[in-house]
Image 1 (cartoon, helix red, strand yellow):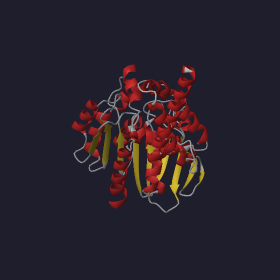
Image 2: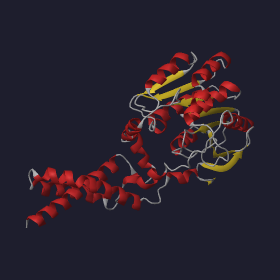
Image 3: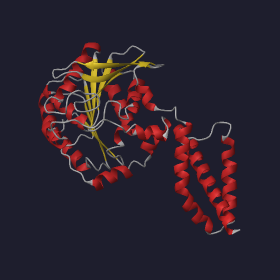
Image 4: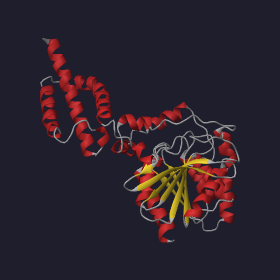
Length: 364
């Protein structure tokens, strides 16, 4: 009899967690986490109430039941949500083709060191502004890029997503100074087609963008996210970054895709390199690039954003950048943003959208 009671309590515990998770997914509009349809949503509240009522009969044992069933319920919910929403893959929005609000073309951008693989995303409405987006180390041109692409399209800006040397589809290994020409050549290509051109660099991409503009690249606006001055981290720092993924900025991705597709969006080819990333970042010289921009590019609109909880590029580096950045530049240190969450954080996207709209559209 006790075995039957224990089994029944476990079932009610699972029902409680599944109903609670489904309620949270509905309230937060995380459609990729939903396991019920509109017709079955009405059953969630009664199921939750019934499970709580039955668990109350167990008294103190109910807390143990809830603790033991929480992890299986979470795993089961993620599996069910992934299966039900298996067609909800946000990466499909970055495939070449014609869509309701955009046209995407797969291109090879000619540069001084060879072709750069790219996706050229153009809104259907006529636009005279475009932004080149350079990804971080170990990533590629589509790596969690749909939030920033959607944001730029809402501003009626064209977007050029590029693979830096050694990453994605690039035919060349990561090397210095060749990688700088990825940005220089991409901006030259955009300038032929658009009146106003900006660039957004993320982490390593930010270092490359700064160096390119400090050298010869012509940009009307430059956005740099979490660009490191130097790179040093341990497994503990990486663990901190993983733990910081459990925050609203990351969970919001489940509005766009299923848990399976959000996790698999992390996939990217291994880096091919003739120079290690740490040595490359030192060679790109963020501080020196900023000093040269200050001396030669008077008034170039510059926005720098760092994360207040970044374990890879700690806030001390942001303070070093602040000391040498041009007086007309703007730096934001976003509280609670980590290295992995900053590029997709809604606060980051709003800052970039408002700033680029002012610099590339209002002033243009």
